[in-house]
Amino acid sequence: MAEHYKITFEPMGVQAKAPAGTSIYEAAGIINIPLRADCGGKGLCGKCRVIVDPPHNLSALTESELGIFSPDEIKRSYRLACQAQIQGDVTITIPEQMADSREARGKTGLRGKYPFDPMVERIGLQKDELPEPKDGILADGASWVAERATRVAGHEVFIEDLGALRQLSRPEAYEGEITLVNHLKRGITAVIPGNKSRSLGLAVDVGTTTLAAYLCDFHTGEVIASSASVNPQRRYGEDVISRIAMTDNREDGLAILQQIVVEGINYLLGRCVEEVGASAEDIDEVTLVGNTTMEQIFIGFHPHGLGVWPYLPVLSSPRDLRAEEVGLNLNPGTNVYLFPVISGFVGGDTVGAILAEKPFLRDEMCLIVDIGTNGELVLGNRDGLWATSCATGPALEGAQISCGMRAVSGAIHKVELDSRTGGPTWSVLGDDENIPPVGICGSGLIDAIAVMRKMGVLLPNGRLKEGMPGVICDENGVGREYVLVP
Ligand code: FES
Image (cartoon, rainbow, N blue to C red):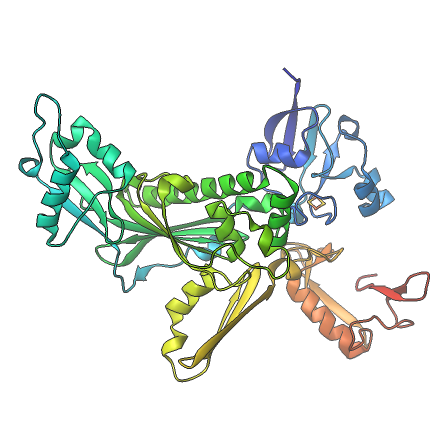
């Protein structure tokens, strides 16, 4: 067996063991330490930088690293987590602005009652309504149960789902009262021993950056629990294009992305039911929305077509799936409703927003704006709706900006024009007012562009004006960089 080395991550003080050749990024993943990886580990973005000790216990600096780090940073033992490979015991220090967070709090504030009309119902059958096995053998028990259920429910009930039939085939299914979960389109999806009237629904939002789950009581319409976390696919890139590239570049890419997003949803599902003292068995239906790429990966469709013109999804209609076939830890036959998508870059999450806001019932024009990692806009009223999308999150969090960073301590978040000097002034996030700037976040970037336009540094066509203070030109005299903080 290959020798395993000890990797200590600071400031958390936690340790992982990994064989030689494991990247720092992979080692962090073993113990669930989230790191930024905006370019999906290609050594291009420089956002996964860490400080290592001792440096000689890692592989040699790669060309990407030599291009990204200054001589001073190399001297201070900076490495890219996606490039440096373990070759001995090592301590890795993660600078605050490079750490990612598994928690995503902004999406869990939803509570209250909502109008509801579930597609599922629970039907209880008493023991005396169940067939009696003769000599341990039951002839066509499923038809018998369906007939009794039809009588109790007052409408036709049928059993075709394999998972439900398997549950019904077990001898204990006839030992006492049972509860049937009936989906109005798919028939019985689960057979649960005992009288279990609790009926819950789970709504899942698979975002490029964040996963969120909301547990709803189907008897009251109340959202009783919610949970959110970072989408674990993020370690393979910040945006949908990186995820599509991952499925194109690695044979196991799609399987990995699908598996980890399902694990992420199972994690949230577990947290939701735990919060209210319920069990996964109580969940009778799941609805799932996401942008088109996220939905396709969840269902195991290769998203290649979404990355090349004309950017078409494999399927745009809704789908009813079984929990078992997508790997969710629920009754095997539990229905998972996947929202329809509008186009390659306007997905089921936008359909959900349209259904919630109902602009199609209004006379006045409405604009729905969903700003996430992708941004979607829907404009219209009862006469028609128009939808489109654009990049937002990484575009504003510094993915392609050499000094770009999230809005954490040390980020320039505000830039203003100083009327006295005619030059820019800036403000830095952090508790200490003397904290030095280490990068610039989205709001700072927008401010900086506005100020650069006012100063005449940035021309209307987006070029930097040569000869202006702060503009650095290349060997051909073309303005390439603007120095905001000298
Ligand atoms: S450089 Fe390592 S993830 Fe981009």
